[in-house]
Image (cartoon, rainbow, N blue to C red; front, side):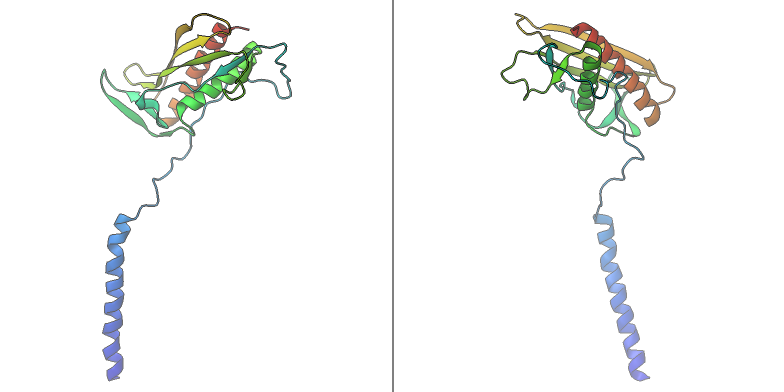
Length: 205
């Protein structure tokens, strides 16, 4: 009996020390930020029909590059302009990819569907005669004061054989009911499609 009473406190002390050592670690170790419930993406309203073949001999080719962006929209979050010089981000709203890549893909799909152009990558275009669309995605977020989703794209088009670059600014504004993830994704998708359709019309066939 004496030995048993002597060992219990030792074991209890050992367990207490182990727990005490583990407590500080729980506050230091991070397993990553909690992911949002859903990721946002863009869907082109105009799509090339599945199975449609395109021939470079009968259709012009164009390179559409990923546009440059300011730092505010270079991240996968949705910026909110809350004043002339104030910026925040929509809670729980996150893009599946950087907005510039999503926008470039949407524009490529729209241009191919609306104009019949063959959209090629810069690597595929090496040594070939192609038009090229570059630009800067200036705005891709929400205007809290006006309750609008805003997409502004400064486009630069170099046509094959042309001596100068054509430049044009495109902008679309879509009303939003609330500043939240779902409203932001829907409205920005609509605004991006409006801009892409205007860009396709500008490029032409």
